Length: 442
Ligand code: SF4
Ligand code: SF4
Image (tube, rainbow, N blue to C red; front, side, top):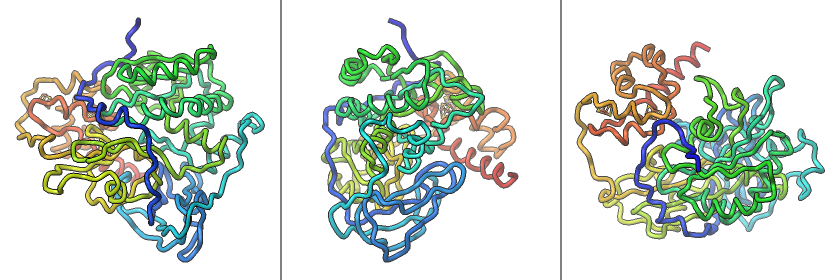
């Protein structure tokens, strides 16, 4: 049996056993939601409702801007009570958010849809995905309809379905594959119809044997789809690492997967495509893992986008505040620390992880001993210790020359460092500074 994996990577404790066998449960619909106009990568959507308007669940409230952008829909039925500037952890700044107060049970507004998706042309399907505000749900939040438009000079050899879910604690994609396999396979068929790849691969880490078995049984009669069990290694689910593991193709520096004839979609995104095209549902809800030793009822949940973290945690319960070390959007490797639980969730939010002080023992930081462990594990072939030196000296020009913009912020270097240096966090900051300078220069 060949081993499908990539160069570098680490093996942090998985801690998936906390939630891997917990079925997805629906959380109560919240009384209020905050819907960011930047709920995606690219230009903010433009609000098309005003304070006092009545909106239905699924109603368009923010219209995608030109270029890279995505629609935003109300995730509850109620009244628009504010259009405010709110801290958006996904962008790291204050963004415009439409605040909707729920006033009744759901009254849905649906997209154009049909169980027999082949009644639509390829262009119509891309339009439905655009209308539905579908974005990459693995965390990237890139507008999905744009990914589905293949440039004339490119071909899709391989469509890769990302079921790796390598981040510790997170099990929602595992549960999605186990509980919603039929819908995910239908979503893959929709993408097959639109993109017409030569081959389709579904990559799942081999720590999810049930998902592998279920998906394998579902695709048994489709010779075009191949299930690929992947070695369990972090960050196996990162797009470029997944492409290399499965196809042996390398996405060039600064390039895109399509440059090597490949497109990658996460399993939750595939489900959202299915839900939009077959059920006519815009992206207003999704699955999430809420886990960590600080959560009383850890599990996998279905929630309305824009719910505050406080409302999510109210339902699952958390331990006393003085026992908590940190609360993260996402998992411990790539997660974003939450500054206040009153902040809202967003479309790319696949996990909330609550870690206790007992679980995260404070580690003192020591000077770099030039052991090169960070170099060995970096999946992008970078020299993290050197980039850190350049970042600390604010030599952004040299950091850029040495590839810092290729850093995928996976945290593998920070995890392995015997001196406990948080290299990855420092690269996030330096990258933001370089990107802001580049933007100013146009
Ligand atoms: S792993 Fe840490 S100590 Fe070792 S070279 Fe990298 S930064 Fe230095
Ligand atoms: S330098 Fe970036 S890509 Fe490399 S291990 Fe560190 S965080 Fe990951």
